[in-house]
Length: 97
Image 1 (cartoon, rainbow, N blue to C red):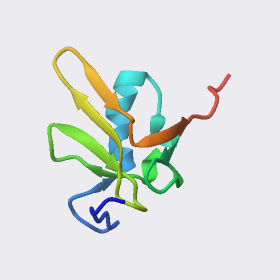
Image 2: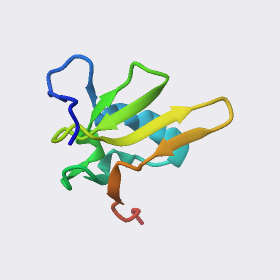
Image 3: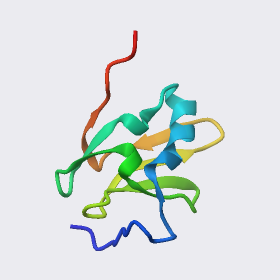
């Protein structure tokens, strides 16, 4: 278990909707509706419900339940790096026809 506290009203964090724009630029779709299953506590929540630290060179999303990192997003001049090691499963709804 993580020792990081991720309180909803902590001003260091924003909700997972902060990832909407950056992920849309990379993937071409709204991934905030995706559900992630946390490796630490095995809880499944929408990406929009995660706690995101956005005051660094990248974005770090943490599980609001246990505080473990579920996603990292870093952009360089040539690449976008998405690290999902903290997620067991990323579940997406099917594309609309």
